Image 1 (spheres, helix red, strand yellow):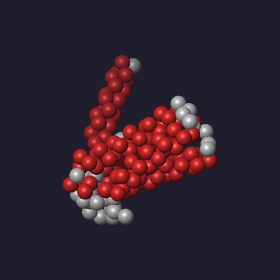
Image 2 (image 1 turned 180 degrees about the vertical axis):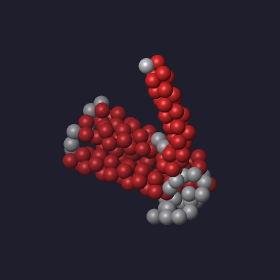
Image 3 (image 1 turned 90 degrees about the horizontal axis):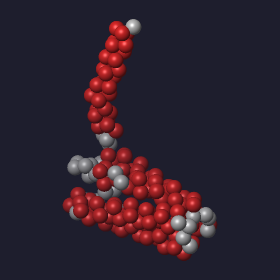
Image 4 (image 1 turned 30 degrees about the vertical axis):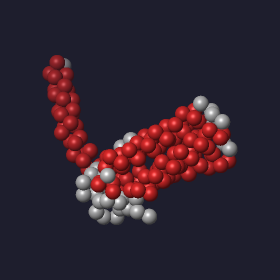
Length: 153
């Protein structure tokens, strides 16, 4: 019985070692197409923004805005990491300014996260419809500000 437990411990250890060794290759495989990843990220942000807009336009409950706004914040967190060197070539609308004005691009990305977070907070606090509309407008302005400078039409 002790021999069986010892063998099982070695098998478990081998599994952990194997997972650690394979993990980086799986992680790097997920990042093989940063252009596709950032397109998917922006598509999801766009869909969430449409969902929020529909709620705001319909005068829907503030509580329906919290989750999609928080998802935008979560999607924005890694967004600027999806622009590694060399990903300016291919089917992308990213302008060269992304790479030549990296600090400005990062600031614009973080501004969207800040504005989406402010919208989520306003909705969670059940602020007035006017306050929520203003927060949504600020989030939209942050989106547009980035697009106007860093994305081709």
